[in-house]
Length: 147
Image (cartoon, rainbow, N blue to C red; front, side, top):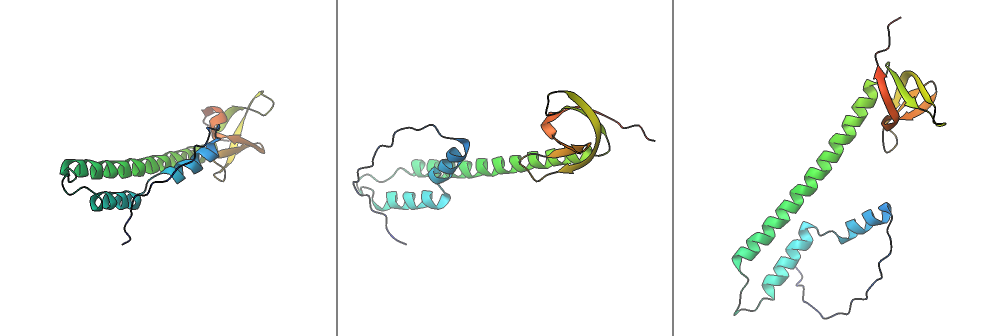
């Protein structure tokens, strides 16, 4: 394993720029600390500590506990996001054969029988009378009378 030695470096200050959602997500992934990064820093801290003032063991336990909590929260967020996606897909599929009311692209109220569902975009859509309707645009659902 390579030892990490602290060096004095000047870090340039970058002025704040408004970020879009995409750049914010990219920056978050670049600025996030992985478990490996954390362990490298902890090992470097232990290797470079002052022998007359060793690291307090309670601090080390606290730091490793915080790492574990961070990893669990990240895992929970991912699981929650997946569950929400699956729930929306199931809701869209459940609308097939039912009559929905929605607002069309011109802003007028419309209704029709759902003939299909699509999961290809960022959120599910349903097909009504040849029109694609976002699941979030569905205003009401009624059972289609059997013929």
